[in-house]
Every structure is written in C-alpha cells, then in structure tokens.
Image (cartoon, rainbow, N blue to C red; front, side, top):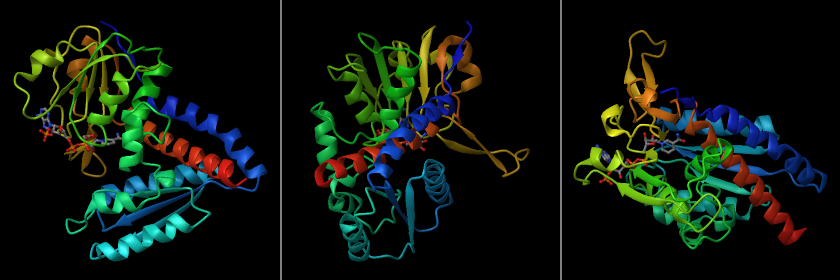
Length: 296
Ligand code: NAP
C-alpha cells in the first residue's frame, strides 16, 4: 500500500505563518507577545527543547526569555520565580521545562502559574476546562496532533482510535480531545498502557493509532491494521556510531516496518515534534490577545 507522509514541519510552518498577522495586530496595539521558559538543571534534551522554543519565538517576533537555574534550586526559589513572572506584564506565557529535579514538587509549581499564562496547558484549571470541552489553553502536543489530522482532512468522527500511553501531557489529553463532541472529536477512543493485556489485538483495531510510549520502535507492522493512520509521538535516542552525534532519533513506531501498511504516517523527527512548538507559539499569541482584551 502506498502511504502518505504526514509532514509536521509543513503544517507547523502553515500554523506559524497564520500567527504572523495576529502578532502584527498585537504589536500595532503596543503589545509584543512574551514567553518565559524556566530551565532547571543541565539535561541536554531539555536544553535543546528550550532553545528550539526560543528560536521559534525569535523567528516570529515573540519576545522570549530563558531563565536558567541550577538543579539545586529550592521549591521556594522556583515558586518565587513563577510568582514574579505572573506579575510581569511583558510575559504572557510561562513554561517550566520538565523534567524537574526529584526534590521539586512539579504539580505545586504548575499550580502557582497563572492559568491565563499557562501556555503548556498543564494547570488543572486548563486541564479541567479541556475535559469539559470549553475554550481554554490546550496542551500543545495533543492539540498539535489534532491540527495535523485536520490539515490532512482526516476527520476522527466515528473512527476507532487507539492511544498507546496514558501520560498527563500526551495520552490522556489527546484521548479526551478526540472524544469531545466537537469538530475534531467524536471518535471512539481506547487508551492502552503498560498493563494492557494483548496490546497487538487492541492496536490492530485502530483506524487512527496514536503512540506515546517513550520506547524505541515498540509498534511493529503485525500490530497495525491495513490502511491505519499512524501518529508517532515518541522521541527516542538510539546509539548510532555512523551518526555525527553518536545517536539518532527514532519514534515509538518502527517506521520502516509499518509504513507500507499505513495510509498516513508521521516521521520522527519531523512529525509531531514541530507541531508541539507551533502550538506553544499559538498559545502564547492567544494569551497575549486575551491579556489585551482584559486590559486594552
Ligand atoms: P510517559 O509519561 O513516560 O508515559 C509513557 C506511557 O506509555 C505510560 O502510560 C506507560 O504506561 C506507557 N507504556 C510504556 N511502555 C509501554 C508498553 N510497552 N506498552 C504499552 N504502553 C507502554 O511518556 P510521555 O511524556 O507521554 O511521552 C511519550 C513519548 O513521547 C516520549 O518519547 C516523549 O519524549 C515523547 N514526547 C514527544 C513530544 C513531541 O513534541 N514530539 C511531546 C511530548 C512527549 P504506564 O502508565 O502503565 O506506565
């Protein structure tokens, strides 16, 4: 079967291009959207993610600030940084890059972020509003997946969707969004996880298979229905002595093995990843627009 590649870079560019007139309109009113990223510790992957986000801001004319702190930071010190950012009128979006050091209570930090500035969509207020199907700042990766499907005219309505992974940032929210009674919802969704018995039997049912496990190439062609739409969220580093950096990135899906069974499939990298950043930019612009509506 011939498959169509779902090009996340292309869709992310279209979304970011669509933000440009909105950013200009804000600037005409004297508002420059601003995003602050708090990076704790020296995890190289986190540093790469934060740099990519800052670079995306720069390209769009969004003001960005990266606050770098040692892993030894205390809960109280981190909380104070968030409170200061909440008060800063030049900052419309705040993100705290995870993972945080073990001694930090991540939920307690998320709870301090003003939900109106919670551009990751992780604050329980925004999570609750999303589950209620109300307009709110949506989590970036799940929202990015919906945008990918929409761009390729894939309507989840009535489709059998299987989400593998039940994290609070990907699996659970994407399942929630796809079951909403809404334009990109109305799917019949099953969530699988590490306790799921006979995973292949479940994944084989999927018209749309969304995989967010965090383990390299777990999903193989025998687990996929002919003609399935495969969205691979996973990003895994595997050793590769031929690669410049000594590793290469692969997804949770064995792309080469699965591609010929799929009707649509995302690559890794270049699939979901760029969408996460595009949706973060979108949320920052929305937060800036909302701030103007309140004070302008
Ligand atoms: P996570 O919090 O570690 O959750 C992984 C989920 O997968 C858990 O629910 C776990 O089940 C389940 N799981 C693990 N092994 C499994 C198996 N063999 N079979 C079935 N289920 C299994 O991960 P996450 O934060 O959702 O991230 C998942 C992946 O997506 C990672 O590679 C991450 O780097 C990537 N990611 C990418 C983006 C992007 O922008 N591209 C954004 C976010 C995350 P239990 O709950 O039972 O433990």
